[in-house]
Amino acid sequence: MPASRSWLRNVFGLSSTRSRPARRRLGLDRLEDRLVPTGLPPAVLIDGPPEVVEFGTYRLNLTAVDPENDPITAWAINWGDGSAIQAVSGNPSTVTHAFGAGPVVRNVTATATVGGETFVARVSAVGTGQTAFHPATTAGLDNSTYMISGRDANGDAVGDLYVSGGDQGSSKVNVYDGATGAFVRTLVSAANGLSRPSGLAFDPDGNLYVSSVLTGSVLRYEWATGAVKTFVSAGSGGLDYPGALTFGPDGGLYVAGQVGGLIFRYDGITGIGRQFADAPNRVADLKFSPDGALYVSTSPEPGSGQPDNRVLRYSGTTGQLLGEFVPEASGGLAAPGALAFGPDGDLYVVSRDNDRVLRYDGQTGSFLGAITGGQEAPFGLTFGPDGDLYVADRKTLSVNSTTVNSFLSIIRYEGPLSGTSATTLPVTVLDLNQA
Image (cartoon, rainbow, N blue to C red; front, side, top):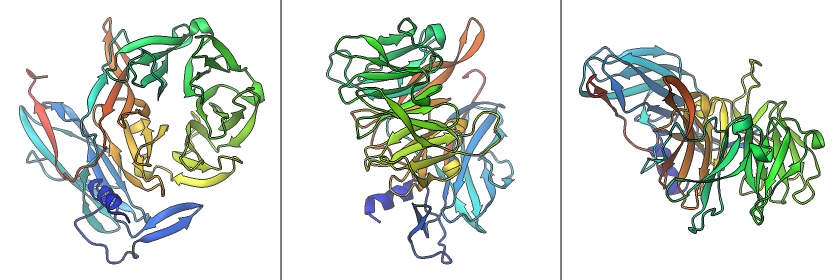
């Protein structure tokens, strides 16, 4: 294992205070065409908000994943306020606690029991300079669905961010300055036939494509002229309710249908298409890796009751399923969304049901850690030309005394992304006058 990877495993909480002599010598086993590390200790992580109002309910997120599938049977939480250690059976994703009066800082620690051994939890990863790159406002984009980075739209020689959002008459694709986060302009709107936009992708010539869910089509914004034209017509090749988009190494446009798990390929010049692959469940996003394979995040169809929170790997040329890359719920993955490969070669996945971004080894699919902080309801992510990670989030704001929870916020995590060796999570308990 290279030294840099060893360091990553350490800071993401993949080492413990106890050795595991019963484990096999560190190596790699092959399972369903996926490299699976053996002999590694479990990942045991905690994270939560930095502040809570006195006497309010605090939610602590728990993550425990074992590469060798030993059972996680219990957690123990020390809330740092003199209360009894909270014993929790099993492996829940969250626990709650009511702190007393503030102002005061409480240092929270935890351990997990994995395969009969106790492991100290580490604090989940954060970027080295988390900032509110584009703060949410009530005048901002709502019902946002997808974000990518792309070409410079305002002449400042810096690549910009593109976000789709809105619904029916308010549908649009907005551009945000890649240097400041400021709104630049709207490229495509309902006036162009866009209705409930979803996936976004740039072709090799720099034209922008957006899926229009309610019209069943994919539109193309031609950069040279500003014209918006239909590239994939409704029903073409069998497509229904288009979602995520990506261009492949072959220049083809790959489109995920939002119902049934079908993936289609369309010629990048003619727009003529056909079914390419069939995922076992609903496709949230799809991305090609540097080695040319197609990675697909899947989640259950609404109301299906089927567990399927995975990332699958397909041949980029034949569409054949190569196997699981990220297994079911690895690292706490719940309702996986957007995918992105980072400059480090690792795979980053939005986990929508527990509001975080999870990081997996780009070669093996092993869970490396969680990136948290500032996220309320993340839905999109992309890496900018600066190498930083940008996460698109939906924030809750009040509009005319009505709570609306869908306004766009973009958070930047400055690279290099790192974990932390800290085992203590400080929580500031605010008194009511501070809140």
